[in-house]
Image (spheres, rainbow over the protein chains, first blue to last red):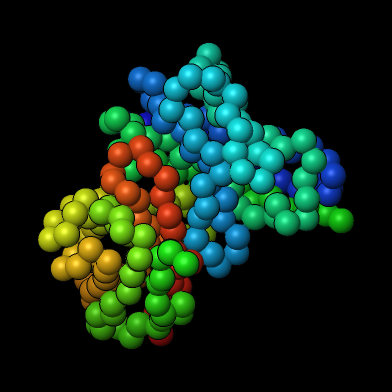
Length: 115
Length: 113
């Protein structure tokens, strides 16, 4: 069975600083990887996804993520954080051909942005 | 605008009571899902439906029931058998159950009185 670890429960950055949120996965085959963002009291929104091909994936809101098979990682990055990026971020790994009902979500990383 | 509507936003349940959470989508998606979210935890799948009149148990289906009589609607009933129902419940949909983007509703917070 697949698993996802987000090592950082809470991260605080200053507005304008760079950001990297870590995600490590465990899965025997090539995984399907996702990053979702959740604002307080809201549902989740897809930021980006990786299925195959180029290991550097561009997403919405200026986010990108890099798939590193050797490190079993799919870290999310943004060069300059905006106050509106404050939210909770979830990494997810899919298996079994990428079926949505086989998605495993990490426990999330809460991002606080200081002015 | 197309999207997923969950209601109510907040719901309170008395001991021994069944409550039903509503989820409606106008995205013409075949697949719909119910997730439970607890503080500091990731999302856990309760039930999913790939098509009308069909649904399957997810990882934590005990104490819950669903129906899918219409493509647009996927209500979740939290029964009295669910002993720890306090959580944030999220409904989602996708075009199919393949590796497609999930669209989420804004959630229902269920609390026990």
